[in-house]
Length: 384
Image (tube, rainbow, N blue to C red; front, side, top):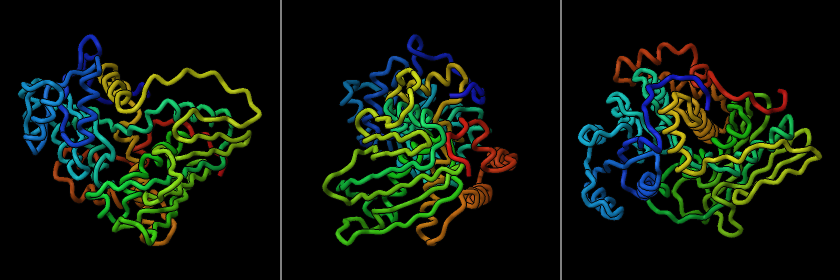
């Protein structure tokens, strides 16, 4: 977190729980409902879903048969006195639900991705500015104490030349994922891309990606991909993955290797990372945050203190930019500059924006990259 105050604060915490409404009663919504119920810093005051029966069943499952439910997040928040919402809707609904909440005076903690498109993500960053409300994305795999430990090891290694992720799973989930054009890149790879940005303290410069579909794949679209990103400072981040790779499957977090000037660091995604280098590791405290419970805790802390959390909309947008750059490269067969992708998304955001205050906020940006990354940890990377 940084100490740059950009949003309205709310007196809240374990002694004064933040009253929240969870929007979305699907499988991920169930996880959030359980997490909020167990969190001392938050109080669940309502459940929203277009399927009211699903919302009622969720309330019953929590043992709270009288918990208010509704089909409209802003309306139920007003009725219950909620102070914030947790947006667990499908990606296409992220932009309208979050925009409505922000301008109703409700800070938002949202599931990844920020929105269904990079243009909509830029609109939401501007909406957060125009409304003065916090919008934080719960990029859940970033809130992993082992990932924090790995980042510390990268700092011990000095300049980093290469960072790699291998991801091989074979889930039969059915539904929309099996009908997507690029299911691995669009629905899953953002976790690794976001973690790479966190580990390196750097943002992407360019992407080259090849996506393909093995002949035995049960997906309609390309379920496998290899991508290489040039990151600020010159480090290369390489991602190699498949969502139809049975046998010897990796962790859902992937398998990681960092190669630096003083040695290497390895992480299997499930156990503590290992430093293989002739250095004396610096002593660092263990991260107190983990998974979505950690994201919720940080969200409440940020609302109380005014600090800018990891996952704040501006900061997190660059992870979605990596996804769109990889997809564009896979489609074109060419190396893609991330700034070109950002500029194209910005033009679409300005063109399609319905709110004059959001359009004015967008118009005030000196550059897209400059607006998204004004405050960031300097990259631990090799020179270009």
